[in-house]
Figure (cartoon, rainbow, N blue to C red):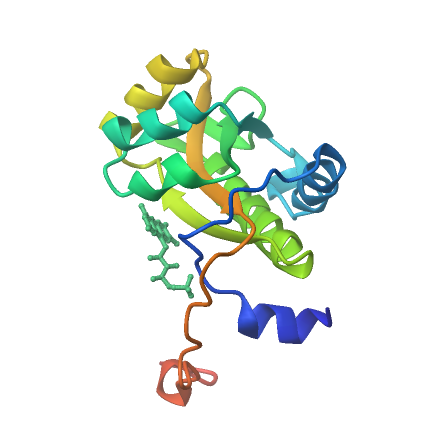
Length: 177
Ligand SMILES: Cc1cc2nc3c(=O)[nH]c(=O)nc-3n(C[C@H](O)[C@H](O)[C@H](O)COP(=O)(O)O)c2cc1C
């Protein structure tokens, strides 16, 4: 699939065929995620792959907008390692780039999946504290691992309609606002 075409045709897919994604495909998709840019090239991401049907079904009790995960082939939780990320916690500054880095990795993940005919849907975790804590408990994540995205995946059993045109030139500001 040509890259620009892939960018325009990726849609969130929430209905999946009852079909496993081969391990090699998953590894290639995660490899693409690991080629994402990251602040100071820290690559603070970790990928937790869930294929267990019971765990997939449990996701909705932690993040209420993930009910369709129960029928997915898998979910990949993209997590940030808060000890590895580019961060500052001194001189009155407290910030880190883990969520941004992981979001970029998640987009690569979804586009790589799309290029292989695999559908996906980004579901949020951080910055929702209850969801972050719930996922930590459900998946035994250590305290320094912050879940950023729940990417639910599978071979599509629906073809979401393409938006007529999302291009909005009014959102583009040249030189000054
Ligand atoms: C930060 C973020 C959080 C999202 N959370 C959810 C979610 O919890 N459940 C869901 O079904 N979709 C979720 N989505 C998917 C959006 O609903 C979807 O991207 C949007 O409607 C645009 O549709 P498209 O992905 O087909 O372009 C989320 C997307 C983003 C970027």
